[in-house]
Length: 504
Image (cartoon, rainbow, N blue to C red; front, side, top):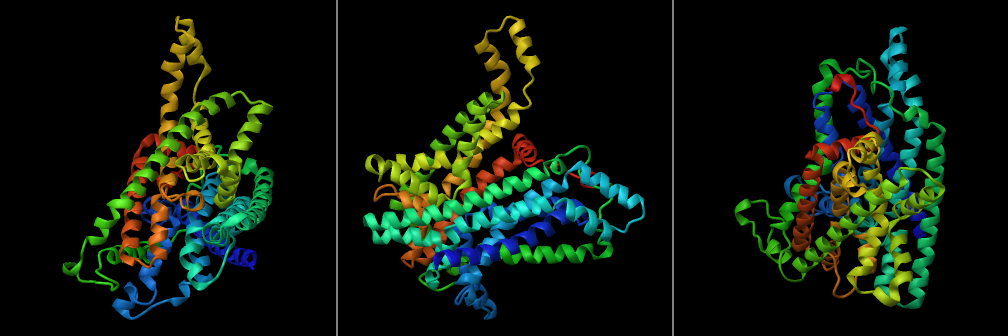
C-alpha cells in the first residue's frame, strides 16, 4: 500500500510541477512580462527552502489554529494527507521542471524556427503551439520523469504531512521500520523497500536519459536563445498577469514563511499576532544545548563533505578532460548515488559500514560524499572546458615546471568551480534530512533531525524556530552563491541557459 500511495502522490505532484514549470519557463523566456528576472529568481525559492520546512510552514499557515484561521477563520485541513503531500511536492518540483524547460527554450535552433514562422505570417499563438512546445516536449518529458523520481524519494514533506494522517509512503515506512521497529527484520524490510524505490528510480532515469539523447541536438544553443520578439505579449494586461503570479508567490512561499516565524515567537501553543506579545524563548532553546550542538555537527559534516567533493571533483574533472572508457565508467558510478533516492543510499551505506561506523559522524559523512560527489565533478567540468592547452604549453615553453604551470594556469581557472561546488554541497548538507534520519546515532543527531524530533514531540514553537534558523542559513549561503558572478556563469553554462535578446 505504501508503494501505491507513493505512486499516487508522485503522479499528482508531477502533473502540477510540469504545468507550473512550462508556464514559468514560457513567461520568462517568451513573454513581455515585467520583472521576469525577479520572478525567475523567486520561482526557484522552493529549491532553497528545505522540503520539511515547507511542510511545517504550510501547517502553520493554513491548518486549524494557523495564521489564516486566526485572521480570516479559513483553514484547509486537507493539507494533512495525500492531497497536501502531492500539492507541496508539486510546488517543490516545479523549479526543477522550470529550469530544464527554460534550458531547452534557450536553444538557438528553436529561436530561428520561431523567427522563420513569424516572418511567414504565422500568429504567435500558432507558433507557440505548433513549433515551440513540440520542440521542447523532450525537455518536458524529462522534467516529468525527474520530478516523479524526486517526489517518490522525498521524505521531508511526507514526514510532516503524511505521517499524521496515517498515510504511509515508501520513505516514511523505511523511516518507521528503522527508527521504531529495530532488529534484523526491520533492516531487511527497509532494504527491500529501498531496493524497490531504487529500481524504480533507475528505470525512470534510464528512460529519461534515452529520451534526452534522442533530441540532444535541439537543446544545444547555437545563436540567440529565442525569437527577436516575445511570443506571449500581454500588452495592457501585463500588470494583471504579474499581479496574479505575485499572489501565487505570496500564498505558496511568503505567507507560509511569515506563519512559521509568527509561530516561532508565539508563547505556549497559541498563535500570537501582536508583536508586543512575541517572545524569543524558542530561539534561545534552538540556539543552545543539544540543538546548537546538532547545528555544529551539521555544519561540520556539511563543510567536510563540501571540501572533499569540491576538491576531489576538480581532480576527477581534470582527469576526465581526456575521455576514456574508464573515465566514463567513473563518471557514471559517481552520478548513480545522486540519481538514487537518499533513503536508498543511506540503506546501502548502513549495510556496508554498520559494523564499524554506525553511530559515528563518519557514516553520515560517507553518505554525503557519495551522494553529492557528482556535483563537484559537474561544476568543475564546466571550468575545465575553458582551459586552453595553448596556455599550458606557453607556460611550459617559457620554462615553467609542470607543477608551476598547474599552479599558475590550471588551478586559478578551477577555483570558481570549486567554490561553487563547495557552496552547493554545503547548502544541501546543512539541511539534509533523509539520509541523516536513518544514519544518526544517540550522539550524532544533525540539525535537520532535531527539527523532525521536535515536531514529533509536539513542540510547535521550538520546531518553527529551528526551521527558521536552518532556512536563514540556507538563504544566506544561497545568496552568496547566487550573487557571485562566477557561480552564476557556471550554473548557467551547466544548464545550457542563454538569455533571450529582449531580456538584456
